[in-house]
Length: 579
Image (cartoon, rainbow, N blue to C red; front, side, top):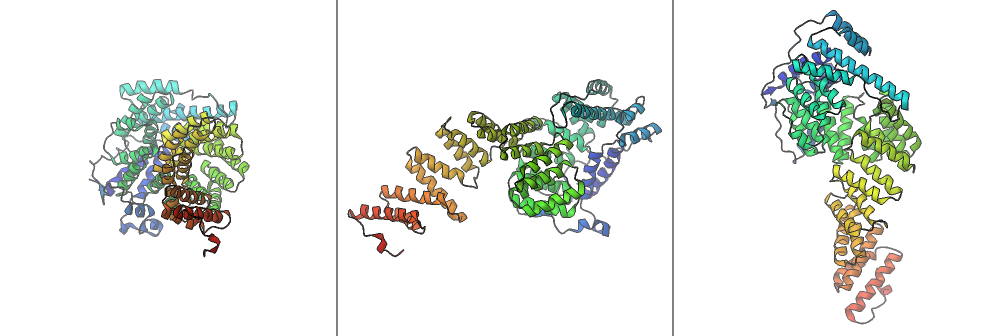
């Protein structure tokens, strides 16, 4: 059994080691999990009253969700205990301290040069890591010089060849540790050798499981559940964090939520887990719950910018202009030169209908981080609104280049080609988006509309798509209405009546009215009248009498026809009936 205190001691040691090797992102992540462990009440002080919360929204969410059956441990994990990270045996030499200072000042080549003749594994890692970052820094400079901040460029990290050669030789002789294996995996990934990269990263996390950066790189290579299942990973609580993240990226949201529910046994107050849970809920389109979770996340961590772009997407979808304005102002004051901040401000201007300003901020986000996927996709949406389809297509293609599994970019490409009157191309891209997100009714409806165009006019295929949309819980009711109309057009009145009745039930349940309801009532009244089911026909005609104008006259006409069909004689004038 792994206890809370055991996890706490592991993480504390790991933070020191990760920071000492300049892996600050991994150290920050570890620190956030450290304070996410529920504290001993006897240790409470006024400075850590955050942990005195009675319950968090993430706990409320799991306590009411019966679909997740993973048992939640109360005091620890049922896993074999893992030894604490071994502290470095040797005291840092003067050269290492100098190199680390250079590294912290972003003088990577100087840091690498200082350690060129050092042989300790710690120095070897920092030597090569600094060299790798020096190459990355130069690559970014070349990209800006050659093509501008948003242009396409063939610039590469020119240090990768020598790094792969040297690290490979050191691995064969056992002269690098788990951190060196992590760097070797990153280099192999950049060079396109994914199989060896996975092997190196697995070896790294198995020997030192506390490096979240290694787990993140490994997740980026797990593009399918088959790849994930083939990994031979040791049993450690960090593996559960990894699987929760990997399941989420593979759109296995129920499994991801189950993992995070399990991790709540120790990390009861982890902001990371709450944010990841909110992301999964967002993908399940549970916007009200997501909004509650992000509100609490901001109360606990008011200067947080990370993940807030997703919160802005929720506020945008709910058209909460005031809340989105407040969030945009807040992140602007916190850190206006973060890509997430620019994206949030762009969403605000988009909701206000100021699409040019929105594009300006999305472009600013991309200048800060060229591989910021959300900005490319959202900028494509803005260009669609501005009817600039060539620019939209370019933005969506850049998003697909970054993440070929992003259904939103494929869907955007489909929309763009649909606007250009090219349904064959649109259909291809809609199919790609459905492959990555098969349970989204909007994608099936978009593909069905393609089949209905004059160029294709494949109504049977459209019907199949609309049926899939109904099975995927089409909350807007578009699919039911279209199924009824298509069957009516094809002369299948029984099927049309079935779907009109279903659509009518949906509209009654939601308290909706409008042209679709009138159309359904007229068809059903006529259909049952023609089949001599006069009682059912009168029910629908009576409902039509509640309308004014032409709808009421249509109902009177149908009722006259029903009276005539029942008696064989002309009916009395309905003007004499009390209505």
